[in-house]
Image (cartoon, rainbow, N blue to C red; front, side):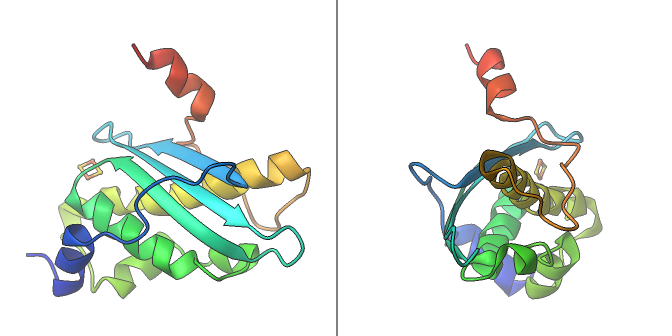
Length: 147
Ligand code: FES
């Protein structure tokens, strides 16, 4: 049911963790299952290159695998190139997912976009072609729901 690549990234996820003083942090929620994904980006201000990226999730195996692959795909890229790391690109790199798991893969793309949005806001810049993901739940709102 799952490709070898999906199993590999699920069992040995790359770039799990967090980045202190990250350039941008994005947190998104999946409306279908309620799972959450957070991505941290370390971006070089001068070159716009993503030096490092980490993720944390309360998500299923497919969400872990897609986020792991997505972080691998954006690392070392420029902000503009990172926008091209779409859900579709991640799925292709993983040799696909079962249809009922496609919604899980959206978390990775949206969390990256949310982190880029956060970066742009903090630096007062506009990233061409970037829109704030609708599923962006931000850090503040999440804090309010913590007990
Ligand atoms: Fe929630 Fe997969 S079931 S992200």
